[in-house]
Length: 258
Image 1 (tube, rainbow, N blue to C red):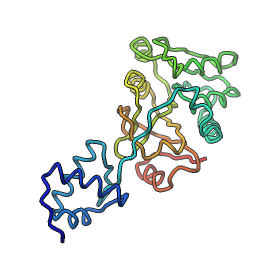
Image 2 (image 1 turned 180 degrees about the vertical axis):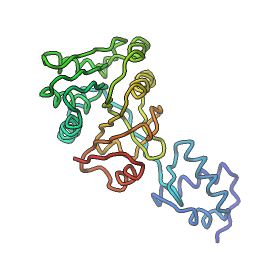
Image 3 (image 1 turned 30 degrees about the vertical axis):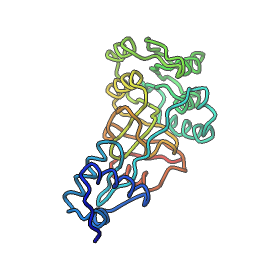
Image 4 (image 1 turned 120 degrees about the vertical axis):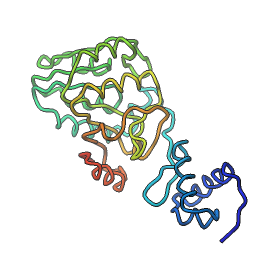
């Protein structure tokens, strides 16, 4: 057993480096490497998880993968386009004719909207200008557009006016995109004003369907939206990590990987 004389802060900095080199570590490996007790190792891992540096699992930890900054909608539209189209079709298949639903903003949710054009008797609430434009000419869809401040890069309406409108509404299903989804941290985004509107969206839905391609899985962004317990269904593509999807199913979330 190697003897180290690190302070707590120094030890945790070394622990981050140690985990990055190995990609994942167990409690026993941390105890041996730093000559500390299991209780101290767990406390260090807990502190590093709270700081967003590591993500714990039973008996150890892995390095937390931060989601990169979100580029504008126009740049994201062609990224994972095939996967997003399949996700959109699968999510639209979960919507029944006559439903009252909410579609948030985002490239994957826009694909859902495109796949809903053949549905009948829908009421669609949305804060996305692109979803509005996609569904505005469908005669059998009742479209409710939320007001608010237009966020040009996302083509979405956000802020107090949008949230006040949501206060008076209830929907059976909310279909939302997300920047990052993590087993412990839950749903996170990277722009606080939009996130505040997203939180309100989640709160008015009887069930929440999250649509996100595989690049969002196991990642953490900077602003908390909702815990995993808020999610009923997760629709992603076939490249999503199987162990991640299994863990979601263990949390009673219905998963479709298409």
